[in-house]
Length: 132
Image (cartoon, rainbow, N blue to C red; front, side):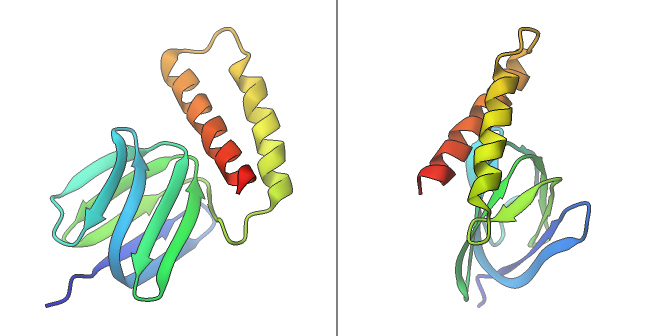
């Protein structure tokens, strides 16, 4: 019996990724990093900035996401995000520029707790990516 499910990732420009042979996906959800396997209960959750890991027959792929929503239903994981990049193809200058811009946002005085959390999360992830 197959232990695989379908993954669809969509961003505003296009269908970013569609795979039928996914064994597991680790998503950076608000509730914490979440592992999705075949026959997971139906779920809808929001993404926070982080690394999305996809495990399939072809190996492990890692992507940086800034935000979005996931839905798992009927053994299909759908991810809608405004920003996603493959870590294999991400431009280091983009990471440096994003880190500087994001750190400037953290200095704003009128940030609410949620915004501060998301900005801090994004900074941590960008620093982690740039150090690798």
